[in-house]
Amino acid sequence: MKKGWIFAIVFMLLTAGAGAAGAAYYYGKDNRLPQEFTVGGFQVGGLTASAALEQIQARIAELEDTRVVGLPSVPNGTSDRKLASRTLKQLGMKLMADDAQSALEQHRDRGWWDRVVQRVKGETNVSYDVSVKWDDTVLERELWQTWGSAVGVAPKNAKRKINSQDEVVYTPEIPGTHLDVPGLAGLVKKLAPVSLANGGSGGTGVKSHNVALPMVVKAPPVTVASLKAEGIERKITEFTTSFATSAAGRSHNVTVTAMALNNTLLKPDEVFGYGKIVDKADKVYGYREAPVIVKGKLTPGIGGGICQVSSTLYNAILQVGLDVVERRNHSLVVHYLPPGLDATFADGYVNFRFRNSTGKQLLIRTEVHDKHLTVKLFGTLPDNVSYQTETEQIKVVEPRIKYVGNPTLKLGTQQRLQKGEPGYVVDTYRVKYVDGKQVARDKMPRSNYRAQDELIAVHPDDPRLKPQDTTPPPSQDPTKQGPVEPV
Image (cartoon, rainbow, N blue to C red; front, side, top):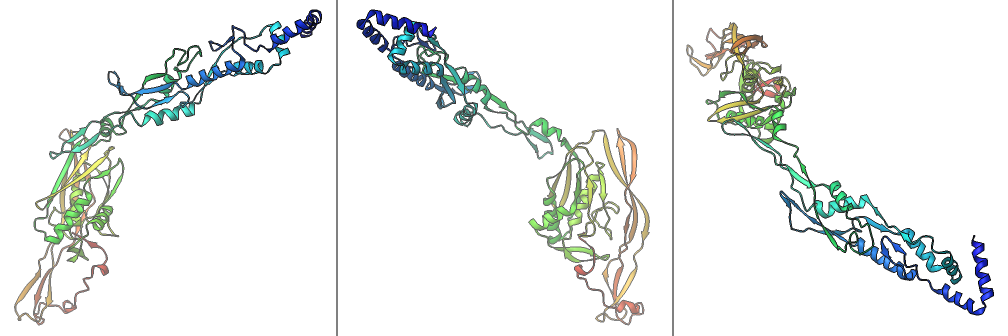
């Protein structure tokens, strides 16, 4: 077919002569586009290919420069407060007319003879479309950097507080909001131009668009519901002991140990170890000198009073039915609790441990007021369930009277150095009640207390003094006496 057209033109030129050849040359030099030539609805017919390329590129640049202005959302619509803006090009949009540009470049670069041939044949395609391409990575990054930090409200966690009446109260959470980047990306993509016809976005002549920034509600990680699910519903028990007769050193030790124990939170099935509380109190506050038990005798030492806190806690956990893992009574009777209800601690020898068997979290709170220590437990316990402790004295061990020599005393006189205290063997029971009726009576580990000898000083010639009693007492250095029980 192409050869046929060429032969026809050659024949025309040969028969028409030089005048016709000149006319054909002039006809071929005219590189204007056909009148019906359009690109993306934009009419460029009658223009030269070079002029058309310039106008198309300018129109594309104009459309890519259309600005997107963010408007923050408000409860009943959008705010008229404008935020930063970005062009569609900055947001990752690229407007392309590759096929049209390629055709125009070919038209521009043809020789005069090729144009004559093309004009005789007629243009094969005079209408071209435009296309839009988005770089989604750029789009999402620019949306977040431009508006993400300028809008939105950070969520606030719910809070749980125990007031002065020991009531568990909650401060509700406040949901936050943040920019819905995927949703905004969808809105921005709808602003892409579909025509080059009139300039501006979408061929409407609009140079910018206001877009209501879509927001997503963001719940905080801690809500009232999540706090309640932890199970700290109410105060389930409290227990108080007095240290009114304690000297300053022991009072200090009781107080700082209670402070270290305060606000201890146990997870379900977590085993509490009292040794950690003692270590914490010692490191943070330090312990002072107060009486301790060494080999069955009271003697000055560091940390006396520690065990009043563990014993008070022991009675509190008995009243809610928690599993006792490790507990031992003091070697001597203590006077702030009945025999069978104390729990001693000896660093490196005896610990006090129990398991949080409530199935929920357990919070331990302490109060020290007017030389009274109170341990309170907050957690979950059915209202119709309660516990009581009972003790049964199995045996009494009467104290011995022991005489020691003192040459400063007159013969026939005496001086009491230590009051004798009986020893006991005691069984302790924890009794469970449901709806006021006893349903269980569990025996706790038996408690054995030594008797404390009554010591009386007499003249060395007193007949009541036995030879062995004249032997000097052993060293009272607690570090050389084995377990030290800080009563």
